[in-house]
Image (cartoon, rainbow, N blue to C red; front, top):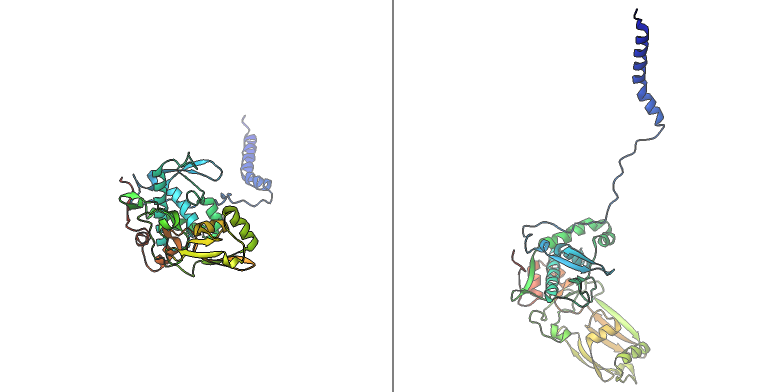
Length: 343
């Protein structure tokens, strides 16, 4: 005869197991508080490309630039990516938008000009490098983020737009990209290329530049002890006569168009202002010089070689309402602005 009691007992045990299982699981977890899903650590990646209607064949995204990095390795970047890094390094991101756009076009044009020349012996395996004495300054997104801090995202986006808003545009002379040199700040005027490098370039002529006392370190002073000046100068110019009173060493200053120094006689030897700038680490060759028994003192205005676009001048023009096109056609004589390559 079938006995229902064992079946009932089994059923009861199953019901108890189902009821008690959640309680047992909670007990096994102790007092732990549920943890939130870990979030990835923030990275220093910044926006360096923005699509524009001009992008495509012949634009920045279609051109690769091989760049030699400080560690000697070579990386390939699109022109847009490379230009972001150059503009971030070359011009303060706090500058006016039109000035940043002018800088982007200038940097693009300079890059295209250098690539058109061909192999550079300083970096034979790359188109450009990060050495400012050879090519252009360079700042990686990671370095930019560290430098800019809380403003990194805002300024990164601002520079990305300056590059993308001018996508594919270059400064042209007779239809070809120019040698679009630029510098930091001028002493009222830029210089003609012939005054600095000895060769005349039709689009690198002297023009007025509107920056002034708002420029950081616009006026600087370098005082060189007399004995140090003698040692350094005579090493380079052993025929100079630096006897007698230091105030008599300097004669016949020949000015350049901006009022700076083309040449000056030092101890009877004619020396270029640019050479004195290099010898004594002056910010520009726009200087006056005085000397006494203690020191030779240079009073310097501006910063850079003085040829092409002044960056602080571009910012002053932008503040006054000039567009990036107006800025560029002011600083580069007789040029046009347009696509550097057809799609």
